[in-house]
Structures are given as C-alpha cells and as structure tokens.
Length: 396
Image 1 (cartoon, rainbow, N blue to C red):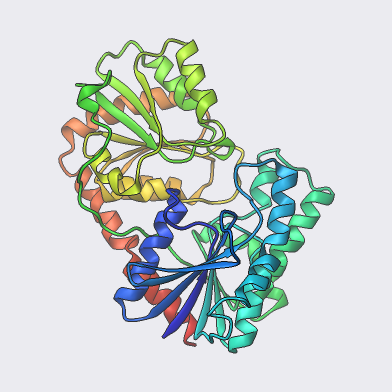
Image 2: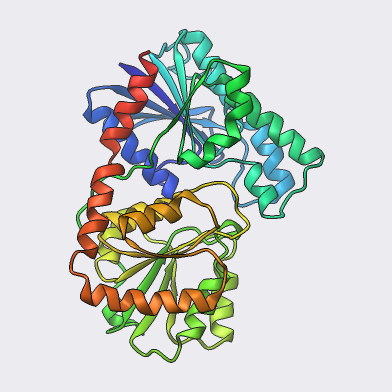
C-alpha cells in the first residue's frame, strides 16, 4: 500500500521524535509498503526537495521557520506552515499522487489543513499519532492561562482532531482529553504504544572512561532539556549525592534549559556532574552501554500522560530507570508493575536520593533487573507492532 506520513521532524535532526519517525518509516518499508514522508523546511532555496532515505521517499517543502525562535514568531510561522506546504506541494512532482492512507504526527498541532487536503484528494482514511497534548500541558505548566491564546490553540488542535478517522494516544490516561471529540464524530481512539527499533551498542564519541566520571556508577540523561522536563531536581539530586564518590551524573543533549543547567552545576561546583552536547542517535546504545541507570524527568505540574522516548531507549539497552514525574502519570504504574526501576512523584529531592541509593544497591544484587527492562522493550515498544496497528486502522 502507498502511505504518506506528515511530520515536522526527521533525520538529519537528532530529536527523539526524528529517531522514532525514522524507525517507523523503515518498518513501513520492511513490511512491503511504499511510504513518503512530507516535511516542512525553512532551509530550502526552492519550493521543494525530493530525496530517498533507507527506501523511504522524503519530500521537504519550503515553509517558515518554527524552531528556536520566540513564541510569537513561532506561532505565526506554525500558522502559515501548512498553507506554505500545500502551496509548494502543488509545485512538486508528487502534486497529483494519491495515497491509500494519510498518517501524521503531533507535535505539531498545525498539520490539520495538510492532512485534510491529502485525505480528501485521495478519498482515504487518516491516522493521527499524537504524542503532545497541546495546549493542555502548557496550561498545566503555568506557561499559558485559559484566555484568548489558549482558545486559539485549542481551536487549532480540535480542527486537527476533526480530520482524523483514528487517533493513536500514548497511554490510556490520555483518553479523557478526547471525550468531546468522540461525542462529536464517529472517530476511533486507541492506544498506540511508542516504538523504537532495536540497535546494537556500537561506537560512541563520548568515552566515559576518559572523563571525570570514570569508574563511577553513572546516572545518565540523554535528550531534550527544557521547561517540560523540570530537570532542576536532578541537579539537586547530584548535589545531595556529592559525598558519594562512587556516583556520577551525565547529561547529554540540548534544549532551552541546557546551558542554564550546566552553568548552575558549575556554580555549585558539582564535580560529580558532566554535561555533553547532543550526539548522533545511532551512538546512544554505545553511550548507555557505559552507564548504569537512566534518568527520566517530567515537570510535576504535568497532568497529561507521557512515556518519553528516552524511557524506551533505556529499556532497549537494559538500563533501569530513576524517574521523577507527575503524580498519576501512567508511566508510574509501568515502572512499578514491570519492576524496571523506581519512581518519585512527590517532587522531594530527599525521596529521590533514597531511591537513587537503593537502586544502585538493587543493580548490584538483582541479576534479572536488566533482563526485565529488555523484555519490556521487546514486548511493547517494537516498531513492527506499531506499523501493523496503524495499517490495520487505515484499512478498515
């Protein structure tokens, strides 16, 4: 079958979303389907650029910039983005292509017009993979009230939902955000687990044995460091454990808070903490092979449910997790029931410190801990199951 996938992130970007969509795209091809990924790009000199990557056709369409800019400029750029994409799609060689199914990935919430146009032109079904329930999480974080900006973004999100025949959410707990949608239309709502392709541990440009963390039990965090993660408590944890000479903390990645956190660690003279720039996603298994425990952080003000991509990478590499996340998040029960680490929800560094020290001991004594992590990945988070579920929904 011939499918189109609309997204705003894809390699060569190194975000967890880009890696996920790369893996999903490869799996579509492996299962015998034809897939075209359609992306906005602010770096093109022409209207479109067509390339092939691992058997996947990638169409980049010129669109306004929406990354690493101010909120107002970003909102204007995202508002214009789908219409720029549609205009430039009509100039591309794929202008008259008809699809057997339209799939799109949120974030962003602004792809509704593109998905709708392709769906109507092809007379096919559509599937929205939603991994970011915006603007709800922004309200939870106190970044936005329920005034005019919220109502605007909510209207955009609701339009996007209205285009979808099927919406795939991360966890059962997120279903409550779609009660109105289910009442208004005959759409289907289902849980679509996150996914990640298996990858062997290989070369990594970060050699921990040549750093200040050599010989220590290493807690690692690799990924975005922004407001939504609420990572200050992880620095507080490192501060509380500075007397443990056998424990170190490694933070790898980028984000709006990355430099601030690094500066804060330096001002506190935290010699047990090391910050590194982001690395190629293919190097992540090699990085984790040198570490002992994976860190997960979500701001406690969150009310939506989220299973971060980094959690999958930890499980894939057999790393137990130490998590500090919001109360009621479905991930809490996953970690506890599957016995793949420990999780704190009270936002207290004292709780996290006790759990960290207990988890270090457990890693030394529980021979089956790593196997349980790996087993959870293999059972729930492989891309093969995700593609079969999406294709099955589009064929109804």
